[in-house]
Length: 213
Length: 213
DNA sequence: CCCATTTTAGAGTTGACATTCTAATTTCAC
DNA sequence: GTGAAATTAGAATGTCAACTCTAAAATGGG
Image 1 (cartoon, helix red, strand yellow):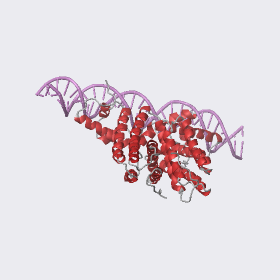
Image 2 (tube, each protein chain N blue to C red):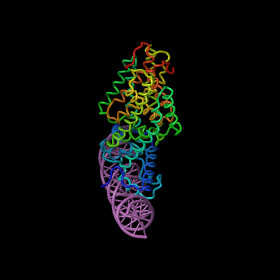
Image 3 (cartoon, each protein chain N blue to C red):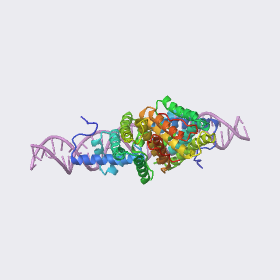
Image 4 (cartoon, each protein chain N blue to C red):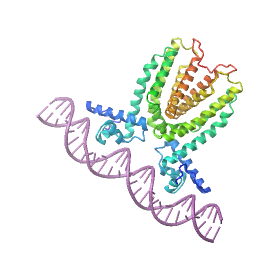
Protein backbone atom coordinates (compact mmCIF):
# COMPACT_ATOMS: atom_id res chain seq x y z
CA UNK A 1 0.00 0.00 0.00
CA UNK A 2 2.48 2.63 -1.04
CA UNK A 3 0.49 5.83 -1.06
CA UNK A 4 1.52 7.58 -4.24
CA UNK A 5 0.82 11.18 -3.43
CA UNK A 6 2.95 10.85 -0.34
CA UNK A 7 0.25 11.74 2.12
CA UNK A 8 0.06 9.03 4.69
CA UNK A 9 0.29 9.26 8.44
CA UNK A 10 2.70 12.06 9.00
CA UNK A 11 3.73 13.18 12.39
CA UNK A 12 4.48 16.85 12.93
CA UNK A 13 8.17 16.23 12.59
CA UNK A 14 7.59 14.10 9.55
CA UNK A 15 5.64 16.80 7.80
CA UNK A 16 8.32 19.30 8.65
CA UNK A 17 11.14 17.37 7.03
CA UNK A 18 8.96 16.45 4.12
CA UNK A 19 8.25 20.10 3.55
CA UNK A 20 11.90 20.93 3.94
CA UNK A 21 12.79 18.43 1.27
CA UNK A 22 10.19 19.71 -1.17
CA UNK A 23 11.19 23.31 -0.66
CA UNK A 24 14.86 22.54 -1.11
CA UNK A 25 14.22 20.44 -4.19
CA UNK A 26 12.03 23.14 -5.67
CA UNK A 27 14.73 25.73 -5.19
CA UNK A 28 17.46 23.63 -6.70
CA UNK A 29 15.36 22.42 -9.60
CA UNK A 30 14.39 25.97 -10.31
CA UNK A 31 18.00 27.09 -10.38
CA UNK A 32 19.61 24.18 -12.17
CA UNK A 33 16.81 22.21 -13.72
CA UNK A 34 15.37 18.88 -12.67
CA UNK A 35 17.90 16.63 -14.36
CA UNK A 36 20.86 18.55 -12.98
CA UNK A 37 19.60 18.35 -9.42
CA UNK A 38 20.86 15.27 -7.62
CA UNK A 39 19.29 13.63 -4.63
CA UNK A 40 22.47 14.33 -2.74
CA UNK A 41 22.19 18.05 -3.47
CA UNK A 42 18.68 17.97 -2.13
CA UNK A 43 19.76 16.20 1.01
CA UNK A 44 22.36 18.82 1.74
CA UNK A 45 20.07 21.74 0.99
CA UNK A 46 17.27 20.29 3.09
CA UNK A 47 19.69 19.39 5.84
CA UNK A 48 18.64 15.79 6.05
CA UNK A 49 21.41 13.38 6.83
CA UNK A 50 20.41 10.29 4.93
CA UNK A 51 18.98 9.30 1.56
CA UNK A 52 16.49 7.15 3.36
CA UNK A 53 14.47 10.21 4.34
CA UNK A 54 14.00 11.13 0.77
CA UNK A 55 12.84 7.65 -0.14
CA UNK A 56 10.74 7.40 2.94
CA UNK A 57 8.56 10.34 1.93
CA UNK A 58 8.79 9.92 -1.82
CA UNK A 59 9.09 6.66 -3.59
CA UNK A 60 11.50 8.00 -6.16
CA UNK A 61 12.70 11.16 -7.81
CA UNK A 62 9.74 11.38 -10.14
CA UNK A 63 7.34 11.42 -7.23
CA UNK A 64 9.38 14.17 -5.65
CA UNK A 65 9.12 16.13 -8.87
CA UNK A 66 5.35 15.82 -8.65
CA UNK A 67 5.46 17.33 -5.21
CA UNK A 68 7.72 20.10 -6.46
CA UNK A 69 5.30 20.98 -9.23
CA UNK A 70 2.47 21.17 -6.75
CA UNK A 71 4.57 23.30 -4.45
CA UNK A 72 5.53 25.74 -7.19
CA UNK A 73 1.95 25.92 -8.36
CA UNK A 74 0.87 26.98 -4.90
CA UNK A 75 3.68 29.50 -4.65
CA UNK A 76 2.86 31.11 -7.96
CA UNK A 77 -0.85 31.26 -7.35
CA UNK A 78 -0.34 32.63 -3.88
CA UNK A 79 1.60 35.49 -5.40
CA UNK A 80 -0.61 36.04 -8.41
CA UNK A 81 -4.11 35.69 -7.06
CA UNK A 82 -4.13 38.68 -4.74
CA UNK A 83 -2.90 40.90 -7.54
CA UNK A 84 -5.31 39.53 -10.11
CA UNK A 85 -8.47 39.27 -8.08
CA UNK A 86 -8.64 43.01 -7.63
CA UNK A 87 -8.26 44.11 -11.21
CA UNK A 88 -10.63 47.03 -11.30
CA UNK A 89 -8.74 49.45 -13.50
CA UNK A 90 -5.83 49.77 -15.87
CA UNK A 91 -3.86 51.14 -12.98
CA UNK A 92 -4.17 47.87 -11.14
CA UNK A 93 -3.29 45.97 -14.30
CA UNK A 94 -0.22 48.10 -14.56
CA UNK A 95 0.52 47.40 -10.92
CA UNK A 96 0.43 43.69 -11.65
CA UNK A 97 2.84 44.23 -14.52
CA UNK A 98 5.17 46.23 -12.32
CA UNK A 99 5.07 43.64 -9.58
CA UNK A 100 6.01 40.86 -11.98
CA UNK A 101 8.84 42.87 -13.45
CA UNK A 102 10.06 43.79 -10.01
CA UNK A 103 10.22 40.19 -8.87
CA UNK A 104 12.46 39.29 -11.77
CA UNK A 105 14.65 42.27 -11.25
CA UNK A 106 14.98 41.42 -7.57
CA UNK A 107 16.40 38.02 -8.41
CA UNK A 108 18.79 39.47 -10.96
CA UNK A 109 16.78 38.03 -13.81
CA UNK A 110 17.98 34.57 -12.96
CA UNK A 111 15.51 31.76 -13.32
CA UNK A 112 12.44 32.26 -15.44
CA UNK A 113 9.00 31.20 -14.36
CA UNK A 114 8.94 28.49 -11.69
CA UNK A 115 6.31 26.68 -13.70
CA UNK A 116 7.64 27.61 -17.11
CA UNK A 117 11.07 26.15 -16.57
CA UNK A 118 9.52 22.92 -15.37
CA UNK A 119 7.18 22.92 -18.34
CA UNK A 120 10.01 23.41 -20.79
CA UNK A 121 12.01 20.58 -19.34
CA UNK A 122 9.28 18.08 -18.65
CA UNK A 123 6.42 18.56 -21.09
CA UNK A 124 7.91 16.35 -23.76
CA UNK A 125 9.38 13.74 -21.46
CA UNK A 126 7.00 13.17 -18.58
CA UNK A 127 3.33 13.02 -19.57
CA UNK A 128 2.18 13.09 -15.97
CA UNK A 129 4.18 16.19 -15.23
CA UNK A 130 2.89 17.80 -18.39
CA UNK A 131 -0.71 17.32 -17.35
CA UNK A 132 -0.03 18.51 -13.87
CA UNK A 133 1.55 21.67 -15.22
CA UNK A 134 -1.22 22.14 -17.72
CA UNK A 135 -3.68 22.06 -14.84
CA UNK A 136 -1.58 24.61 -12.99
CA UNK A 137 -1.63 26.92 -15.97
CA UNK A 138 -5.34 26.38 -16.16
CA UNK A 139 -5.81 27.71 -12.65
CA UNK A 140 -3.54 30.63 -13.31
CA UNK A 141 -5.36 31.42 -16.52
CA UNK A 142 -8.65 31.33 -14.68
CA UNK A 143 -7.36 33.83 -12.18
CA UNK A 144 -6.33 36.19 -14.95
CA UNK A 145 -9.63 35.72 -16.73
CA UNK A 146 -11.60 36.44 -13.58
CA UNK A 147 -9.62 39.59 -13.08
CA UNK A 148 -10.30 40.82 -16.58
CA UNK A 149 -13.92 39.77 -16.32
CA UNK A 150 -14.32 41.85 -13.19
CA UNK A 151 -12.79 44.78 -15.03
CA UNK A 152 -15.42 44.35 -17.68
CA UNK A 153 -18.17 44.10 -15.09
CA UNK A 154 -16.98 47.31 -13.55
CA UNK A 155 -17.31 48.98 -16.91
CA UNK A 156 -13.61 49.42 -17.52
CA UNK A 157 -13.74 47.18 -20.57
CA UNK A 158 -16.36 47.18 -23.28
CA UNK A 159 -18.62 44.26 -24.05
CA UNK A 160 -16.55 43.18 -27.05
CA UNK A 161 -13.61 42.25 -24.82
CA UNK A 162 -13.10 38.50 -24.53
CA UNK A 163 -11.60 37.90 -21.07
CA UNK A 164 -10.90 34.26 -21.74
CA UNK A 165 -8.86 34.80 -24.86
CA UNK A 166 -7.17 37.90 -23.51
CA UNK A 167 -6.23 36.04 -20.35
CA UNK A 168 -4.72 33.19 -22.30
CA UNK A 169 -2.76 35.61 -24.44
CA UNK A 170 -1.60 37.59 -21.44
CA UNK A 171 -0.42 34.55 -19.54
CA UNK A 172 1.31 33.24 -22.63
CA UNK A 173 3.01 36.55 -23.21
CA UNK A 174 4.19 36.51 -19.62
CA UNK A 175 5.75 33.09 -20.10
CA UNK A 176 7.68 34.36 -23.07
CA UNK A 177 8.71 37.45 -21.19
CA UNK A 178 10.04 35.43 -18.30
CA UNK A 179 11.97 33.11 -20.58
CA UNK A 180 13.55 36.02 -22.40
CA UNK A 181 14.34 37.74 -19.13
CA UNK A 182 16.18 34.66 -17.99
CA UNK A 183 18.16 34.54 -21.20
CA UNK A 184 18.87 38.24 -21.57
CA UNK A 185 19.45 38.98 -17.93
CA UNK A 186 17.34 42.10 -18.26
CA UNK A 187 13.64 42.80 -18.09
CA UNK A 188 13.30 44.70 -21.33
CA UNK A 189 11.61 41.93 -23.27
CA UNK A 190 9.28 41.23 -20.38
CA UNK A 191 8.32 44.87 -20.16
CA UNK A 192 7.87 45.17 -23.90
CA UNK A 193 5.59 42.20 -24.22
CA UNK A 194 3.49 43.01 -21.17
CA UNK A 195 3.12 46.62 -22.23
CA UNK A 196 2.13 45.51 -25.68
CA UNK A 197 -0.49 43.19 -24.25
CA UNK A 198 -1.85 45.89 -22.00
CA UNK A 199 -2.02 48.21 -24.98
CA UNK A 200 -3.91 45.49 -26.77
CA UNK A 201 -6.38 45.25 -23.92
CA UNK A 202 -6.68 49.00 -23.85
CA UNK A 203 -8.36 48.79 -27.24
CA UNK A 204 -11.35 47.75 -25.18
CA UNK A 205 -10.98 50.51 -22.64
CA UNK A 206 -14.22 52.37 -22.21
CA UNK A 207 -12.47 55.53 -21.14
CA UNK A 208 -10.44 56.01 -24.27
CA UNK A 209 -6.79 56.64 -23.81
CA UNK A 210 -3.88 56.63 -26.23
CA UNK A 211 -1.45 53.75 -25.82
CA UNK A 212 2.13 54.60 -24.97
CA UNK A 213 3.80 55.91 -28.10
CA UNK B 1 46.40 23.07 -30.45
CA UNK B 2 42.93 21.76 -29.92
CA UNK B 3 40.75 23.98 -32.05
CA UNK B 4 37.79 24.79 -29.89
CA UNK B 5 35.13 25.54 -32.45
CA UNK B 6 35.91 22.22 -34.08
CA UNK B 7 36.88 23.61 -37.44
CA UNK B 8 40.27 22.27 -38.31
CA UNK B 9 41.35 20.31 -41.36
CA UNK B 10 38.31 18.31 -42.22
CA UNK B 11 38.21 15.96 -45.12
CA UNK B 12 34.95 15.57 -46.99
CA UNK B 13 34.13 12.43 -45.11
CA UNK B 14 35.09 14.05 -41.88
CA UNK B 15 32.77 16.98 -42.39
CA UNK B 16 29.99 14.60 -43.30
CA UNK B 17 30.15 12.62 -40.07
CA UNK B 18 30.64 15.78 -38.07
CA UNK B 19 27.47 17.19 -39.58
CA UNK B 20 25.67 13.94 -38.99
CA UNK B 21 26.60 14.06 -35.33
CA UNK B 22 25.46 17.64 -34.89
CA UNK B 23 22.16 17.05 -36.63
CA UNK B 24 21.47 13.94 -34.61
CA UNK B 25 22.41 15.64 -31.36
CA UNK B 26 20.25 18.63 -32.20
CA UNK B 27 17.26 16.41 -32.83
CA UNK B 28 17.64 14.44 -29.66
CA UNK B 29 18.36 17.44 -27.48
CA UNK B 30 15.32 19.13 -28.91
CA UNK B 31 13.12 16.17 -28.09
CA UNK B 32 14.50 15.18 -24.72
CA UNK B 33 16.59 18.07 -23.54
CA UNK B 34 20.35 18.37 -23.34
CA UNK B 35 20.88 16.62 -20.03
CA UNK B 36 18.71 13.68 -20.98
CA UNK B 37 20.56 13.08 -24.22
CA UNK B 38 23.48 10.70 -23.79
CA UNK B 39 26.50 10.47 -26.02
CA UNK B 40 25.52 6.89 -26.75
CA UNK B 41 22.09 8.01 -27.98
CA UNK B 42 23.81 10.43 -30.28
CA UNK B 43 26.12 7.76 -31.61
CA UNK B 44 23.24 5.53 -32.49
CA UNK B 45 21.19 8.28 -34.08
CA UNK B 46 24.13 9.56 -36.09
CA UNK B 47 25.12 6.03 -37.03
CA UNK B 48 28.68 6.33 -35.89
CA UNK B 49 30.14 3.23 -34.38
CA UNK B 50 32.48 4.54 -31.76
CA UNK B 51 32.61 7.19 -29.07
CA UNK B 52 35.96 8.24 -30.41
CA UNK B 53 34.31 9.96 -33.36
CA UNK B 54 32.39 12.19 -31.06
CA UNK B 55 35.46 13.14 -29.10
CA UNK B 56 37.49 13.50 -32.23
CA UNK B 57 35.29 16.28 -33.57
CA UNK B 58 34.25 17.77 -30.28
CA UNK B 59 36.36 17.88 -27.22
CA UNK B 60 33.45 17.17 -24.91
CA UNK B 61 29.72 17.34 -24.63
CA UNK B 62 29.67 21.05 -23.90
CA UNK B 63 31.47 21.78 -27.13
CA UNK B 64 28.96 19.66 -28.96
CA UNK B 65 26.18 21.66 -27.36
CA UNK B 66 27.79 24.81 -28.73
CA UNK B 67 27.66 23.33 -32.20
CA UNK B 68 24.05 22.33 -31.68
CA UNK B 69 23.10 25.85 -30.69
CA UNK B 70 24.75 27.21 -33.79
CA UNK B 71 23.01 24.61 -35.89
CA UNK B 72 19.59 25.39 -34.49
CA UNK B 73 20.19 29.09 -34.88
CA UNK B 74 20.84 28.59 -38.56
CA UNK B 75 17.80 26.37 -38.93
CA UNK B 76 15.49 28.85 -37.28
CA UNK B 77 16.80 31.85 -39.16
CA UNK B 78 16.66 29.97 -42.45
CA UNK B 79 12.98 29.40 -41.84
CA UNK B 80 12.15 32.81 -40.44
CA UNK B 81 14.12 35.22 -42.62
CA UNK B 82 12.31 34.58 -45.90
CA UNK B 83 8.97 35.12 -44.20
CA UNK B 84 10.06 38.21 -42.35
CA UNK B 85 12.06 40.01 -45.00
CA UNK B 86 8.98 40.49 -47.14
CA UNK B 87 6.64 41.98 -44.60
CA UNK B 88 4.83 44.52 -46.71
CA UNK B 89 1.31 44.22 -45.39
CA UNK B 90 -0.77 42.83 -42.57
CA UNK B 91 -1.62 39.97 -44.85
CA UNK B 92 2.02 38.91 -44.95
CA UNK B 93 2.27 39.34 -41.20
CA UNK B 94 -0.70 37.07 -40.87
CA UNK B 95 0.95 34.65 -43.26
CA UNK B 96 3.97 34.53 -40.97
CA UNK B 97 1.70 33.83 -38.04
CA UNK B 98 -0.06 31.06 -39.92
CA UNK B 99 3.22 29.50 -40.99
CA UNK B 100 4.49 29.38 -37.42
CA UNK B 101 1.27 27.89 -36.15
CA UNK B 102 1.27 25.34 -38.94
CA UNK B 103 4.77 24.16 -38.15
CA UNK B 104 3.80 23.43 -34.58
CA UNK B 105 0.65 21.68 -35.61
CA UNK B 106 2.58 19.57 -38.09
CA UNK B 107 4.77 18.22 -35.32
CA UNK B 108 1.81 17.53 -33.08
CA UNK B 109 2.75 20.40 -30.82
CA UNK B 110 5.68 18.46 -29.48
CA UNK B 111 8.83 20.37 -28.75
CA UNK B 112 8.65 24.11 -28.37
CA UNK B 113 11.10 26.48 -29.96
CA UNK B 114 14.44 24.90 -30.89
CA UNK B 115 16.17 27.88 -29.36
CA UNK B 116 13.71 28.43 -26.56
CA UNK B 117 14.04 24.97 -25.10
CA UNK B 118 17.80 25.31 -25.12
CA UNK B 119 17.53 28.74 -23.54
CA UNK B 120 15.29 27.48 -20.78
CA UNK B 121 17.61 24.63 -19.93
CA UNK B 122 20.96 26.34 -20.28
CA UNK B 123 20.60 30.05 -19.55
CA UNK B 124 21.09 29.67 -15.83
CA UNK B 125 23.70 26.96 -15.97
CA UNK B 126 26.02 27.62 -18.88
CA UNK B 127 27.01 31.26 -19.31
CA UNK B 128 28.62 30.59 -22.67
CA UNK B 129 25.51 28.94 -24.01
CA UNK B 130 23.41 31.77 -22.65
CA UNK B 131 25.38 34.38 -24.54
CA UNK B 132 25.36 32.32 -27.68
CA UNK B 133 21.59 32.02 -27.48
CA UNK B 134 21.23 35.68 -26.65
CA UNK B 135 23.11 36.49 -29.83
CA UNK B 136 20.85 34.14 -31.77
CA UNK B 137 17.80 35.90 -30.43
CA UNK B 138 19.42 39.16 -31.36
CA UNK B 139 19.66 38.13 -34.98
CA UNK B 140 16.13 36.88 -34.98
CA UNK B 141 14.91 40.05 -33.37
CA UNK B 142 16.73 42.09 -36.01
CA UNK B 143 15.00 40.16 -38.74
CA UNK B 144 11.60 40.89 -37.22
CA UNK B 145 12.48 44.52 -36.71
CA UNK B 146 13.61 44.91 -40.29
CA UNK B 147 10.38 43.39 -41.48
CA UNK B 148 8.30 45.77 -39.42
CA UNK B 149 10.50 48.68 -40.44
CA UNK B 150 9.93 47.88 -44.07
CA UNK B 151 6.19 47.81 -43.41
CA UNK B 152 6.52 51.26 -41.96
CA UNK B 153 8.56 52.45 -44.92
CA UNK B 154 5.91 51.18 -47.25
CA UNK B 155 3.36 53.25 -45.41
CA UNK B 156 1.54 50.35 -43.81
CA UNK B 157 2.45 51.54 -40.34
CA UNK B 158 2.38 55.09 -39.07
CA UNK B 159 5.40 57.02 -37.89
CA UNK B 160 4.61 56.43 -34.21
CA UNK B 161 5.23 52.71 -34.58
CA UNK B 162 8.42 51.57 -32.89
CA UNK B 163 9.68 48.58 -34.91
CA UNK B 164 12.40 47.75 -32.41
CA UNK B 165 10.15 47.48 -29.42
CA UNK B 166 7.37 45.83 -31.33
CA UNK B 167 9.79 43.29 -32.72
CA UNK B 168 11.08 42.44 -29.27
CA UNK B 169 7.56 42.08 -27.98
CA UNK B 170 6.51 39.95 -30.93
CA UNK B 171 9.46 37.60 -30.63
CA UNK B 172 8.93 37.34 -26.90
CA UNK B 173 5.26 36.59 -27.36
CA UNK B 174 6.18 33.91 -29.85
CA UNK B 175 8.48 32.26 -27.33
CA UNK B 176 5.69 32.13 -24.82
CA UNK B 177 3.32 30.79 -27.42
CA UNK B 178 5.66 28.00 -28.36
CA UNK B 179 6.24 27.04 -24.75
CA UNK B 180 2.53 26.92 -24.06
CA UNK B 181 1.93 24.96 -27.22
CA UNK B 182 4.42 22.38 -26.06
CA UNK B 183 2.73 22.13 -22.70
CA UNK B 184 -0.88 22.21 -23.86
CA UNK B 185 -0.45 20.12 -26.96
CA UNK B 186 -2.58 22.56 -28.88
CA UNK B 187 -1.90 25.82 -30.65
CA UNK B 188 -4.60 27.89 -29.01
CA UNK B 189 -2.31 29.87 -26.77
CA UNK B 190 0.10 30.47 -29.61
CA UNK B 191 -2.69 31.74 -31.82
CA UNK B 192 -4.13 33.90 -29.07
CA UNK B 193 -0.87 35.61 -28.24
CA UNK B 194 0.18 36.16 -31.83
CA UNK B 195 -3.23 37.49 -32.78
CA UNK B 196 -3.15 39.80 -29.81
CA UNK B 197 0.26 41.11 -30.82
CA UNK B 198 -0.86 41.64 -34.39
CA UNK B 199 -3.89 43.50 -33.09
CA UNK B 200 -1.52 45.58 -31.04
CA UNK B 201 0.53 46.40 -34.13
CA UNK B 202 -2.63 47.17 -36.01
CA UNK B 203 -3.10 50.17 -33.77
CA UNK B 204 -0.46 51.69 -36.01
CA UNK B 205 -2.12 50.58 -39.23
CA UNK B 206 -2.49 53.52 -41.58
CA UNK B 207 -5.46 51.95 -43.26
CA UNK B 208 -7.65 51.71 -40.19
CA UNK B 209 -9.26 48.41 -39.57
CA UNK B 210 -11.07 47.03 -36.56
CA UNK B 211 -9.21 44.25 -34.73
CA UNK B 212 -10.95 40.91 -34.58
CA UNK B 213 -13.35 41.61 -31.71
C1' DC C 1 52.44 4.09 -54.62
C1' DC C 2 53.92 6.19 -50.15
C1' DC C 3 53.71 8.62 -46.19
C1' DA C 4 51.51 11.87 -43.10
C1' DT C 5 47.26 12.89 -41.45
C1' DT C 6 42.65 12.01 -40.65
C1' DT C 7 39.19 8.96 -39.33
C1' DT C 8 37.27 4.95 -37.07
C1' DA C 9 37.17 0.76 -33.84
C1' DG C 10 36.40 -0.94 -29.58
C1' DA C 11 37.66 -2.07 -25.12
C1' DG C 12 38.37 0.13 -20.80
C1' DT C 13 38.27 3.56 -16.83
C1' DT C 14 36.30 6.52 -13.61
C1' DG C 15 33.09 8.74 -11.13
C1' DA C 16 28.54 9.94 -10.05
C1' DC C 17 23.94 9.11 -8.99
C1' DA C 18 19.50 6.86 -8.05
C1' DT C 19 18.06 3.55 -5.16
C1' DT C 20 18.10 -0.21 -1.43
C1' DC C 21 18.78 -2.49 2.99
C1' DT C 22 19.35 -3.21 7.89
C1' DA C 23 19.11 -1.52 11.91
C1' DA C 24 18.98 2.17 15.31
C1' DT C 25 16.25 5.93 17.26
C1' DT C 26 12.31 8.81 18.10
C1' DT C 27 7.39 9.84 18.47
C1' DC C 28 2.86 9.26 19.94
C1' DA C 29 -1.37 7.02 21.31
C1' DC C 30 -3.08 4.54 25.06
C1' DG D 1 5.79 3.94 30.30
C1' DT D 2 5.17 0.77 26.75
C1' DG D 3 4.62 -0.84 22.27
C1' DA D 4 3.65 -0.06 17.46
C1' DA D 5 4.50 3.05 13.93
C1' DA D 6 7.16 6.68 12.10
C1' DT D 7 11.56 8.54 11.38
C1' DT D 8 16.49 8.59 10.70
C1' DA D 9 21.37 6.61 10.07
C1' DG D 10 24.69 5.05 7.23
C1' DA D 11 26.76 1.79 4.53
C1' DA D 12 26.29 -0.54 0.21
C1' DT D 13 24.88 -1.76 -4.62
C1' DG D 14 24.36 -1.49 -9.40
C1' DT D 15 23.83 1.07 -13.34
C1' DC D 16 24.87 4.32 -16.49
C1' DA D 17 27.18 7.88 -18.79
C1' DA D 18 31.11 10.86 -19.90
C1' DC D 19 35.37 10.35 -21.33
C1' DT D 20 40.20 7.97 -22.51
C1' DC D 21 43.49 5.09 -24.82
C1' DT D 22 45.68 2.17 -28.21
C1' DA D 23 45.76 0.83 -32.39
C1' DA D 24 43.77 -0.20 -36.87
C1' DA D 25 41.79 1.45 -41.35
C1' DA D 26 41.07 5.00 -44.73
C1' DT D 27 42.25 9.23 -47.21
C1' DG D 28 44.74 12.44 -50.02
C1' DG D 29 48.69 15.03 -51.58
C1' DG D 30 53.23 14.39 -53.74
